[in-house]
Length: 411
Image (cartoon, rainbow, N blue to C red):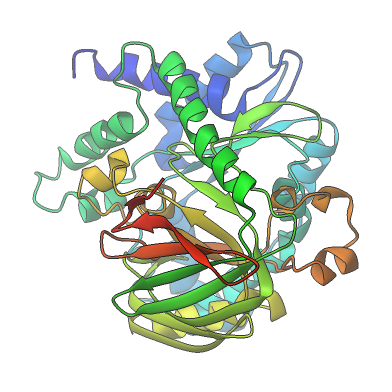
């Protein structure tokens, strides 16, 4: 890199604060992070205060503390999740705070632990987190997710590098895919967001009834809700603040109809789920609901995840990503959904995002569900795109036209 690491880290923090969460003068900021991300957190705090944040609240986690729970906690305690972290964040958000989450997960952290306990912990955390998730999915605040490498994650992505070089290699990959290595990262991001907006505008003009997917192991039709809205990199909070929720981001996404998904779909990348890798898996849908789950690895964890609640077995998001995205071109699997979902088309089990439906933010839960929106305590993206996938847009009269061919835009 032409700039030393500390300078790059500072630039990354500035892009996360100024473009990602877009902290406003006078707005407090919540930062969620693992201890592995401490150097980045310090830079984010610095940048947030320079942007006029009066207070920055850091909520720390520690993956080794999580691992110790699995090794030593009572076996009947995993259906419990603390309430105070959710209440604290919700209170700050309702008072106007923004939120930035730093993911640094080791995808193999819990690989040797009991999948029944993993599922119990995940379900308890998902159910406890509903009030916070509701605010995020309804864009009640400006929020963003970025990444920082843990040693375990870096070792998984760069297994052939020397142990003392693995984290640096992953940092370099993050800086490149997040455009931090450009001469003016903030300006580069603004151009990128504008490019994505042209794609979402085109698809919004089409208002397809459904999308039809065809490829190896995949023959799937996803109905779209009436009045669906394609959204790209930049979104607007209910308070009118523009923000970029995911960094990196290469997707345009909208809302599937919870009752109108039929066929089979095969994953094209591993899914990191609660410290467990789920690999080479497939799902079968009938009338919107998952009716069969198969996986070469992690099947039990995935089955239990799909059974979290009634909506967990239905789709809440469909997203399109071209094969020419920087992450796809890197030909590297990151074993982290934030990155891998931006290398391939993907869909999400669970909660639909209200801003993907015209008038969705003002609907009651009953009205939202009646219009086809899915309600769940989870929202789990998984990758189904590749250079072998073709996607057609299906019109109301049943006619079709190409949307993607061999993983690339057809328009």
